Length: 234
Image (cartoon, rainbow, N blue to C red):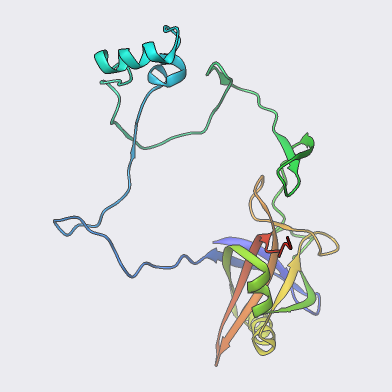
């Protein structure tokens, strides 16, 4: 279970656990014999049978087309169709040579897709479990309906207590949010207004807390979003 450092309205913080809760499927697809199907990766082609490599010996694509029809040069009979298991991502140049040092660039575009500027991409460090800088309770509530209409939530995590004291800590949070029927904006950084980064080098998200309470049970959910819905007038 991952750790998260979270502060409440009284600015008291605690290190808690949080984890994703994927929805369990209720309907399964099975094969004819009743066994559950599963996905596999199959090697389609190799570098030698890629169109960029195959076209080099020929003057035009028509010559390549003839060779494909007559000789099946696009098929690597030794490797095509093999099951692929462990894979790693690598970078290559235009000649398919492996690159060992890559400088990442961030490209910023406007809503029309026109490039505005470029700058070196900075890898952001995770800020969700810093010992001295907890995620802060902002006091800014947003009604659930308004949040659903305004944001697309990409990630959802359940925050969990690790002992009796943190149970009371989280239960009080969830109860207040449940009574207000609203989400609470939370943020990282010293001022508590920075986006959250769950893993180093990962995506920055705006974060909201949702609380649900039923008798002695509670559920505190951290919703993450990096996409806001806006209405454009023609």
